[in-house]
Each structure stands twice: as C-alpha cells, then as structure tokens.
Length: 500
Figure 1 (cartoon, helix red, strand yellow):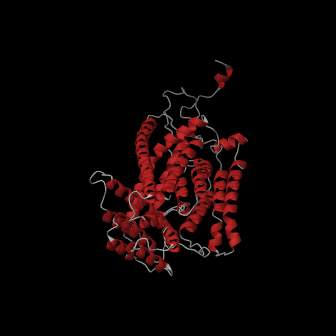
Figure 2 (cartoon, rainbow, N blue to C red; figure 1 turned 120 degrees about the vertical axis):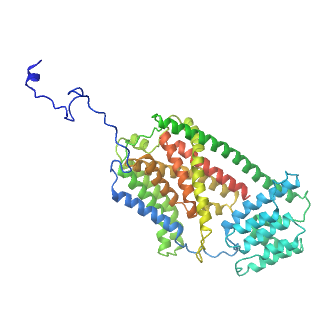
Figure 3 (spheres, rainbow, N blue to C red; figure 1 turned 180 degrees about the horizontal axis):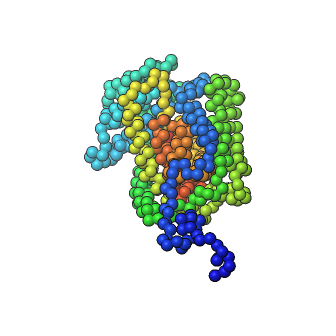
C-alpha cells in the first residue's frame, strides 16, 4: 500500500459517489426514471403560450370570422359551390351505377335510383335551387320517362330562390317538359349555371350511341376506374400498415430502437419562436378581415406577401438562432438526405401505409362527431366549411390552373408544411416533450390551422401524427414529405377526374 492510501480516510459505503465495489454489499441498481410529460423543462411557458395564441388566432380566423363578400360579378353562379362539388362526385357515381345496370351488372350491386337520389337530397344541409336542379337532372337522365318525378325533384327547394334564379328553374323545367326547345343563349346559361349536371339533363333523351353521351359515360367510367384502383391500393396499404405497426410495436416492446430521431441534436427555443413567427405572419391577413379593411389592392397583396415572409422568417430564425454549424442546424430540422434519397422516398411510401390505419382512427372519430352534430340545430346564418377551399377552385378552373393546383397540393404544401411542422415545430417540442406528447401538440396545431370543417380536426390530427412518426423513424424530412405528397396528390387527382 502507498503512503497516500494508508493516510486516506475509510470510504463510506453509503456515499453515492463511492466507487463500485466499496462496502460489503454491491450497490442497488437504480432504474432509469420514467418519462414524464414535461421532461427537461427546457421550453419556457412564455413560448408555449405564444404557440397557443397564434394557433388559436388562425383557428378563430379560419372558422369564426366572416370574410367580406367578393366583388359582384356580372355573371354569377347560384348555389353553394362546395355543395355542388359534392353532388357532382356523388352524381357521377350514380350514373356509373346506372351504366353498370344497363351492362347487366350483378343483382343487388346497383341500388334503386330513387333511393340513391333521396339519400343525396337528405345529405344536403339545406336544399337550395342549385342542388334541386342537380337532382332533377340526374333523375331525368336515369329515368327519362318519369317527367313528374324529375319535376318533383326540381320543386323540392327548401329555401327562397335568389333574384334571377327563377329563370334558371324555368329553363330546367322547359328542358324536362319539352327537350330540345331551348335557344342557344339559354343553353349557354344553363351549362354555366349547372356545370356538369347540364350534360345529363340535355342528353337524357338522346340515344346510347350519341357522341356526347358516350363522352359522358367515358368520363364517369374513368372516375369509377380511378376510385376502384385507389380503393384497392388503400386497402392493401392499410393492411400492410397494420402489419408494420404491429411489428414496430413488438420491436419497441423488445427494447430495440426503431427511431433514428436524435432529440438532443440542436434543439432550442429558437425553433418554437421560428414556428410562432411563421404561423403569425401566415395568418396576419386575418387582421385585415377582422378590422374590415376593404382596400382591394392591400387585400390582394396581403396573402402572397404574408406567405413568403412567413416561410423566410421561420426558416431564418430556426437556422440562425440555433446552435452548431450550418450543416448541423439544417440537419436538426431534417433537411438532409438521410440514408439516401431513393431509400428515403421508398420509406415515405412504406410509411404512408402505416399512416393509413392511424388516419382511419381519426376518420372514425370525425364520423362520430359528424353524426353527433346532426342532433343539434345549425345556427341561423351559419355556413360551415365543408372542405378545403382548393377543392372549390377546381370547379371552374382551366386545365392549366388545375395542374398548378395539383403541383401546389402534392409538391408545394408537403415541402412547406413538413419543413415547418415536422421540422421546425417538432424539433422545438421534442426538446422538452416525449414522442407522443410532442406529436399530439404538433398534430393539434396542424389540424387547427387548416380551413376544413371543425369536425374534420380528428382525421387531420391523426394524419399529422402519422407523418410525425415517419419523421421520428427516418429523421430526414424526405420520407414524410413523400407520404404527405402521396396523400394530397391522390386526393387532388381524384378531384380533377371527378370534376372534368
């Protein structure tokens, strides 16, 4: 023994800093602490309050603030555009079912036309003139000899017609009673007002070999084929996703690591403030509506300017005020190639399969909420949002505009939203929260800032939660971007085919 060891005091075995092996009994193994909701307290309450405020502000502006009426057009279309869009898709399905019946479809597969039309009418919250004309056109096309039934559909309007709309009703009534007697000017007006429904109305008494009728049937069959292919792909993807999620759960329960996301890499409060700046600037045009600013130039410029400034501010704050080198800062946001671009693209497709079962759960909750809202009377004058505004843009858009909208939804939106939500926001939240809590907070934010109906919040949140799991799995944003683009692109392509 050395002199130092002889003169040293005996070591207390209860000392927590004592080396292992000192004392009679080995020290007890202390299990790691259980994860808590607020794990490290690295995010200030002030930052979380700011996040709540901007999300609540955008949510309020999207759902409860009445936007000013657009300038009056010389040539207006009557009726609710979103409702007509829904009727177009349902109407084509009914026409396709009738075509299947003509071709000798299986008995029981093709429902009764009257039952289908009545179900469509019941789904319309308030049967306006445009919806009544659409149902009358479908009835006349499917049953050209049942004039009284078609006229009964036309007269089943549940609200007062707008000034000038009675002329449109009269033209539809004339076409049903005396087909082929409308003037060219009346035909142009009828086709403008009724959109796709003018075709079945005008072609009801034409022969099966009529070119326009064949074209109509071809368009309907294209929608049927697309719907069938998507249904098969989604069903297979759903089943594959269930198997993969079960395998991941077993792997996780066995203690094997399935996520590559590094929660300690480059996280800082700057990411939360970057997202707050992004969302605050993005929603700033809501102030013009709240303040009832009616300057058309300012209103037209506010949206695009706020859009570009919000993305610029969000990315610059997230990268400029976080720690590490520039490469480390961008990598912390998921802006890297992961294990290879093509491998990440494939992972995005596989990951989307896992998103489908999660989204299905949110969809069931949405359907439940929709069913529950049917028991409560609608507020007088309230016009609930029935879908994303981009869907209404498809209604009258040209082919070039539709292509640009498809690019915006399938490419632009995933690039921006994944960068800000699964990149910036998720990085800031994961600094202090566990995976489920951080994912749930970000999912609620994602759903709240979208302009769909309030009852659609669960399915949107479930979709966002699934994209978050892909981010945790791959760390790179390429995979969630691919999954997001695949989802949006499928919906928009179906909308394009459905409104051709």
